[in-house]
Length: 637
Image (cartoon, rainbow, N blue to C red; front, side, top):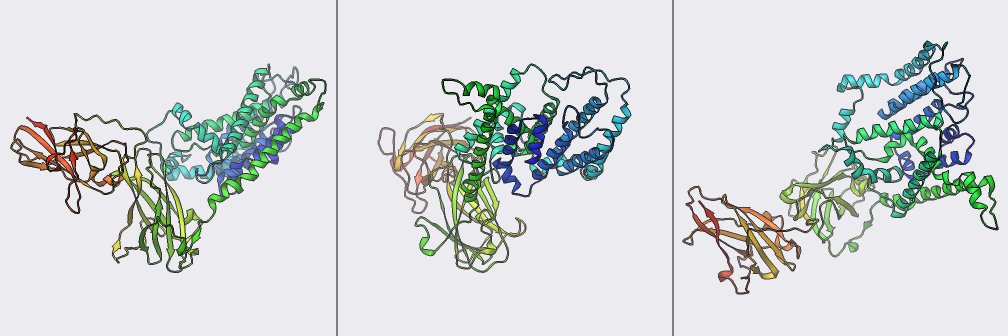
């Protein structure tokens, strides 16, 4: 914060309100405060980059640079140490190097060239040819001292990358660890799809991108950002000369930081605004300038002297606006951790036997004879791909534990394919098993993410286990009847399509069954694959099996494909009223099946009793034996 204040004084000399507001934008950035409270290399990079910029940016028109002065090499060595430490902290610290080289070259040229026609002390920057008598070797020596010192600090690390990974920066290795973007993304797609999350995460997206502030906080920072942008554009349009060199250097650093981040984000999923925190000081300075631009002394004096009773705030008005906005920043930063972050890190509640909910779905599986999963609660309403499923587990400690066991939750969709997972500790890390007391019951809630590409409709099942040290080292599981289990798997919800499904059967039918079940139609091909299109208009109380028989022209059954809908992934009790779906199946056709026309017979039966559901023709007349007949459904040449 202090370095930001000093740096703003160099970029905008004599403007203390702007410098104070810039410092406030750093000090009261809720995301920066959250990051600073954790072990993170962004913390050190913020300090090192701001300190380096303080040495890089010229200090005054009369004394153009902290480095590059006559006499002594302390500035060069200090800057080299900061550049090396920044590059050792994070690869993005290398962005400082070209800015430093440009600043040193420019400041040396300004200090050594003849002082005739020196108009830089005003607002105009004139680039003149290299002056006669300027010694390029002196400049080269200063650059060598700065970057030689920097290489002594960080060079060994990049040499190590080359030896271990075959690349100096190690970016390809980091992408391989973090996970590459698949498929590749264009710059326009990146901007269109991820700009919102990028901006939000500069100001405040906490946890592992899991805790969002309320809408009014986001609206406040959105408004401040738009105000600053509009103010900055207004100032640039109003100016008739080049910006001061100090401003150009800071802007160049912000631009290079953004370019590096975009390049990294296009290789892996890393669209997080906090990755711009290496440039948080100059960004805050520019934002403060944009916010205060409409309140410049000239404009404010005009406004405050309108009407018969002038406010006459005078030169203090500019500072009042800066103070007011700084107070707002402080209030938001003070409220955020208590009201929005802390509740997410509170340990889950412990409950008594009498507090167990009435809708608890009991499991009673034990893990390592130390933990019992009494049961769980899950939302009954259907979920959609891309959403999340809320599940609460009720654990009981059976014995004292010294080990903190991790919990693996794998959400399974159609075909038992994984559609979401969480690997964590109980309570999200806030209720470690080593602190459990025997007999206690823990109500542990999770929001399980659902893959946006998950196939729907389908049941959602959860595969659960505890592990120690590594995921493969799972605790042994015992069922209530004493059987050993490899994992605990149970149904936790239903997944339905996010958008309405349009069915296009090749043969429209319209037969109906009990409980509002309707056969919309079928589609059959000569290879034995076929699809049944179903819909219901009311909940179905039980799970029924669909029987499908293929009959030749003599009424002889030649193949069958009996199974629950979607091979058990969408049982009739899970069907959502009003939502059609396609049930794809296949006949195992005999190799010597003769050419001809074949009929389909189908219906529903209770797998426990064998009793069939009543079936009705489209005109309401009941089908004989409750069997729907589709004549000439399949023709084999």
